[in-house]
Amino acid sequence: MYRSLLLGLLIVAVAYPAGLLFPWWISGPVAALVCFLGRPGPGVAFAVSFVAGLLLWGGLALLADMRNESLLSTQVGQVFRGLPGVALLGLTGLTGAITAALGGWTGAEMRRFFEKR
Image (cartoon, rainbow, N blue to C red; front, side, top):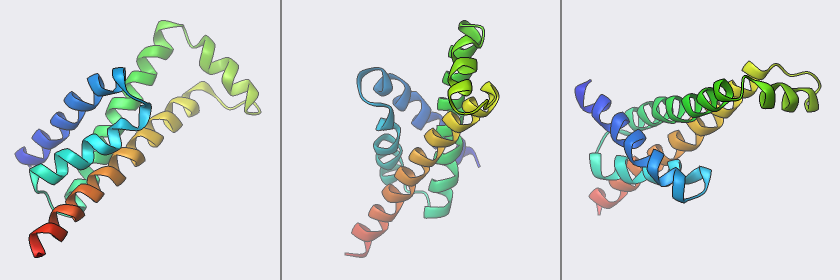
């Protein structure tokens, strides 16, 4: 449990500053690298990376939405046939979570592949 928490925090701690310099999908390669080096099982890597990506991207989206008093999410939601702003925040978090989870799973599977050789 403690190790999983540490891996999740490490993913967030590395993906956030990397996201300032690189495209939004950098959380996938970061999660892959952390899970490759951290040696969790594939299921744990997927779950920990999913939660880390959800917290990172969902939290960043929520923070940005609060700063502009939900004006942007409301306007973008209207473009998508009246989708509520909260749904857009959820979709943003889910996109980041899936990206990180697939990266973490890939890193864990790569580690297993190289250990077998």
